[in-house]
Amino acid sequence: MHTKNLGNCTRNWGALLASVAVSSLCLAPPAHATSGGVRAQDAAGSLAVSLGDSYIAGEGVRWFGNSLSEDGGDTVTNRENRLSLPGWMERNPDLYSGKSRDEIFPDGTYNSKESGKTAEPGCHRSDAAEIHTAGIGHAGRTRNLACSGATTDDILTNEYRGEKPQIQQLDSLLRSADVDTVVVSIGGNDLDLSGLVEDCAKKYFSAGVIGGTCDGANPLAKPDAPEYTSLQEKVGKVLTKVRETFKDRGKTQPRIILQGYPRPIAKKEDLRPIPSVSSRYQNLGYPFKDESVDLLQQVSKHLNNALRKAASLASVNYLDTTEAFQGHELGHKNSVLQVKDGETSDGRAKGKYGPESLEWTRWVDNLGVIGDEQRKRESLHPNYLGTQSEAACLTSFIKQMTKTGAHYTGTCHIGKADGAKQAGPDQTVAAVTEETPRTGIHR
Image 1 (tube, one colour):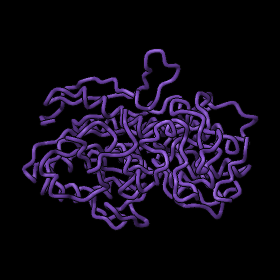
Image 2 (cartoon, rainbow, N blue to C red):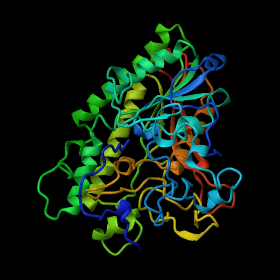
Image 3 (cartoon, helix red, strand yellow):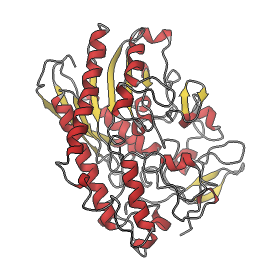
Image 4 (cartoon, rainbow, N blue to C red):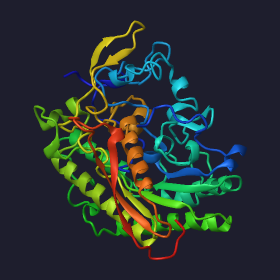
């Protein structure tokens, strides 16, 4: 196995993850899908809108599995800004082959701040984000207002990364457009999960580390920790404010969906066989000891339980995406790393494995002292395949939400086509139950 020495950085411990949240679709989004902003033609039909943090904004969506041959660590090679595509995309030359990143992502790829513009720090919205690639919205009419690194306060009151609070952006949108669906994904940054992941990685690389937060004594290991109660209340305020914003504008109440977080890393019993724990990062991009894995799995579970309770108390719909990557989490024994399988005539890498075989979570990337901050930010986020799986589940969920005045709970699971050994991300579906709302709501 080759050493993953990305960005010419050695794999010693350094700065980690500036922003990490344990928070039959085609790659190219609809031509009218943009990262944000309001245009006159929106008034002609209802929109679907996403609010929240990096997991739904699209951080990491530019990646297509994890590969040992990333040609310097970027999806885009140094050869004339051409995409380095796995084999399954190479087999669709009319859609992808030979096209530049700007051709496939016309609105600025992963770090668009607004249509046609890129800016740092920016909100790192992807033009292939979940809201754009899910089969929702009228004629694909969608808006992504989510922002990488956002907390509940950044939805409600704070200006963040040079933008107004997301709820104000939604209010502005409603002045000239109708919105019938709002999908919210928030909470991971309120719990400072990036700090927790950083501590766990530090513990992995530093023998005999005493103290820190990455052990069973962490308060977040307990399901009844006050942090989860506080988060539940904060998310409840977000959901209430969304509803009030529509009421204040005299708009019909939208279909509101609170979405949980997928499990990004494989459980220790499901890890791909490797020589030792000490080689997990070397071989898997997975810098966690067993006790850290247990803690991260517990926190992920308790976080989603808190979100489920918040949705129930607010009488909005809840989509549990915990299993949206099942079998394709980072390091899972049923998935593989992409390998180089020859090159095309113009030098673009040609992969061997299709989406049903690859990991759907971006590995923990670029831990060197001198490294690419963007790739650190993308660590443990859904890559394109993971986002496609979430989008397919969201599509399935919405199709089953048929009654006005009811709210629904959906649980993602990966289906299989007849005769298929493995399922692709477009086959993720939602198992749905209907609940009677606590309060009268329209959608």
